[in-house]
Length: 131
Image (cartoon, rainbow, N blue to C red; front, side, top):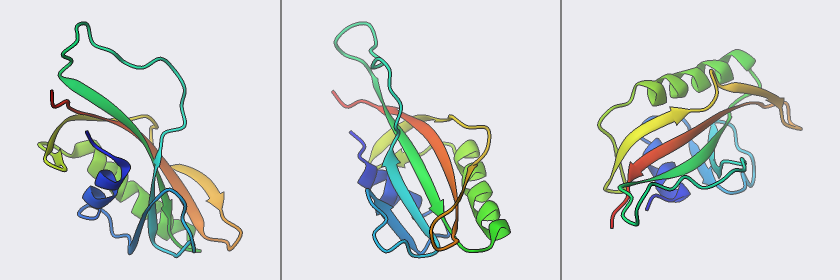
């Protein structure tokens, strides 16, 4: 099983963020990366049979960066490109089969109340299910 905390810790090797969160971004510090459950609905994906070899976790990444729109965009695009091209990965000693990006680029969600620009990357991680 892979949890949001596992993904948060894994992303520390691939992001220039100074602060990493799951759940709520408490003090909303600049140069933060938040990891959240993907807010989508639908039926669960179930393989035929009782011994499925994979599982999926849906994730939304919030890049809460700076009051400079260009800096925020560059950071978000660098992370997106890393996720798009990554190969042969493990998260918490679990083999990752595939990372499916659900948006064509990091989505600009504007600024927070302090004028800090934010972008979101939505993805699904397909990983080895340990039976």
